[in-house]
Length: 461
Ligand code: BG6
Picture 1 (tube, rainbow, N blue to C red):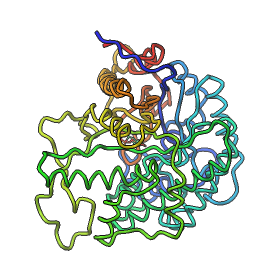
Picture 2: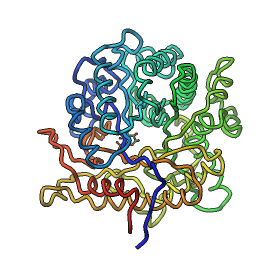
Picture 3: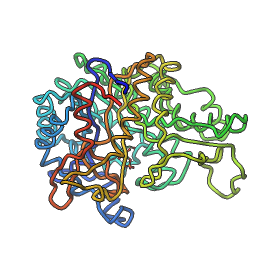
């Protein structure tokens, strides 16, 4: 048996987002999810939309009590932009202010530090109508919203996050058709990515000006390492390009304040560079983050292309590489994602070696499983597979910390079963089960396991 002890004060907790748990109850402006569901409910698993989700809006007290019971000392949630400011750019809604104040106060009263994220895939509909992240006007509206949040909650919230996985709305909304507005256009996708990064840098600048005492600001990125099929130079090149597109495109400007030259050259060569204004790059350079959240679920395996793309097909990132299914890989069949625990270690070592060992934490890691009632025994879901998943990742994280990586905590995705965008409630990720008919919460076996890990600041295995 080995003992895996984590550094003193390690953050144990979980993460979630507004649209996935709150429910669209109370006074709330529509966001793109409310709208898309109204328009195309058949795009969502079993036709389940975002109206009710896990009803956190009404049950936050009970939920926060449970978080405490299972040993959380930190919890990340997001503010819904379209709840706080119904149309995204107008009046601040006082009911929403009360709600978020209550959530923050309730967490603090139970000794759980709130980490607050400003944007988790949920563009207010009125802002999308103005062009979403393609529009500079929307970038400015986001910065105004960020400032309002710092003013309203900055006296108590000390850990701020500008965006969660900003590349996902780029992929989902502008390349691969799994978020509204369902555009397929690489050039527009790159503009969206650039403007999102700009909104991030402007929010960091606003944060510095807000002078929040002891406050820190960061961004959360899904750093999916790109592993080449082989050492063949063609495979290595394919992996390097995938890494530029999907990791360095946000990681480098956020941490180093600049885009990698190789990425800029590649985009220029293919006439894909976004439009920027004078001063944009300086702004990004000046406003680097204090800490980084790392979401990790799966690796990205790539190989050199085997066929030329069809000349009529739109140019896509896959113009430069093919995906590679490694024989023998371990899979989560429900989500269709490979499980590769060592990836979490490789990410941390990369941050240590190439990104100044920036302060970071695992901001999401977890396993979504379909039909979990199968595992119900003695009134509890016996999710040993989830315990194994978390444990094996934690072992690699522990090794990274032993080797000097600056990792401050680990957040599970997620506290309770929640609404997973177009997958709705297909795959359950929670430490706590939610009965969708009654909204009853029941701890799963993994919740008890996480509690003991948090209490002992580690585990034996
Ligand atoms: C992350 C997101 O990508 O993964 C979450 O930040 C999401 O919002 C989670 O729910 C799990 O992915 P999915 O697609 O199964 O919900």
